Image (tube, rainbow, N blue to C red; front, side, top):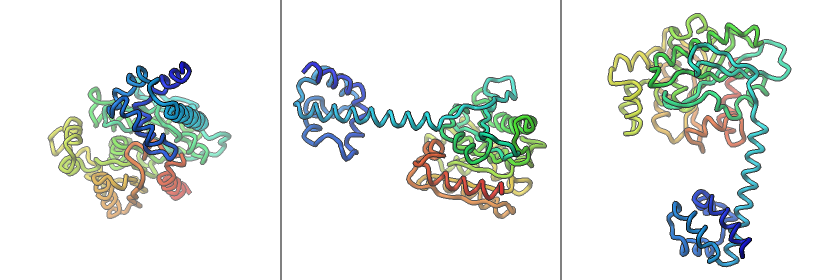
Length: 344
């Protein structure tokens, strides 16, 4: 009984998380066991941990065994996830510093044994223009370098220290800094695809439609990949946003419609634009769909090769996190096909 109580005490530490998962798995505890747990501890998951710690020995032996088996299975699943993460983790070969702020740096990942000047994919993280980290690249470096692309992830200053104008300037400076070291790194300085997620998608689109930010490096942007952005035309995006998004956009972009226009990629389409575009959006996310289609329509009318593609069975975060994994097969295949078209 003491050993059983100890096992259940360990299980209790994850009960608040495990309970909804248990209810969805084929091998979940029986209804009888779940009823027993609820009768003992109630339905409030926030109280379940302390309850099981105090009353674990009041559960039947059968229920205790089922919960213990499930705990062991979850440990195994967690171990497999950790192993997969370790297999796909790749350390940057070098870091480029392009400013005095600690966020103004770029991690560069190199394909193994690269000899020729290969193209480069530059990633811009999201985070509502106020948070995020360029170090969080998940499986992307391993995936893109294994496909014979250099991969880079750029940090940039964030609000409230740096408004969006300065963030876009940071991305433009990062592109210039990368090209300045292209010979030492080994990639082709004239073949860059910029890829951004969420707020990073807005910045990627802005820098790739308004040459003031990247300057003489603008023509090196051969393509743009946008991951579930919803702010390509600020005024209309703000008008159609829910209450939470309205607050975010007002904090970031203010109320000045002239500033909205200056920071809207759609408003810059038609003068100088990167030539190739892929805008991926979560199929069920209406605002991302409408903003992606609006941008792509304008780019197409201006002569660019542009496509908006819906990705189903995902969400805003997974769209980015699962690139290069089996779970993210839809977006990964679309991105890989786009890169082949742009670089070949």
